[in-house]
Length: 352
Image (spheres, one colour):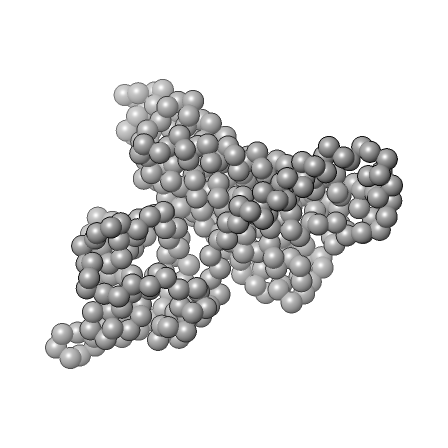
């Protein structure tokens, strides 16, 4: 989403000055609401920074530095504070890069890959996996298993990653609270079940496929780490349902924002595995960001747990225990995405 600036009418990202009492990503979320009516989940870890000169009313200008935060939009309101003051338009990343003026911002937008959730494609793959499971012990399937082929591993990786994106978005919405929490939980449960079908088929294909694109252990380790991440999302939703939680700490929502971003990056990385040599540099950059996100999540986890203990530890020990469990699940999700990053880095080192 780009908007036009008030003075020059050039295309820019929604942005503004820092706001007292709000963290940087919270201020960015507020500006997205004020300027474009956007509501969603912000990742608390900036994706990049760019510089430009901000014009003043007296005709002078001053240097300005802008931090950019990934923001998963869940809705756009019918009305917002600065409605009608700017033009708004959704762009593809490539078109957005062409529309803005700042070179550093162009670079950031041109390499940004939004998550693609394609239920039709994923459902077809899941349906094929279920059909394959029913057929795998027939004599025809046994004979086909002897024939040399490469399997469908890349498509399976990409479909599984898309399911993780959908589950992560649902988790982010879930931790916002509200009346739709049961729907978000069900979305996570459904996507985790679909992911189980895919990993089951991958494990079967690894055993029966003569020629695989990577070492068999590398394939099972990668898909296993990916599945562990969505499994932990499922466990988080189950715990929230079990304890009937309705409200969540700000640090929990920040960790959810990191999970949404880690899932997006993982989905961005999967198609690049088809050509490790050509995409090694890009894969290194993506996995490096996931590792940094996990470290940032650890910091948020520790700070949030400390605040939770001060607020609930003595007054309500059970509330602290429940909150600690939710924090633990969220931390494990980010740990599993770091495992995915490490598996991808291993593939790059072995094959690029």
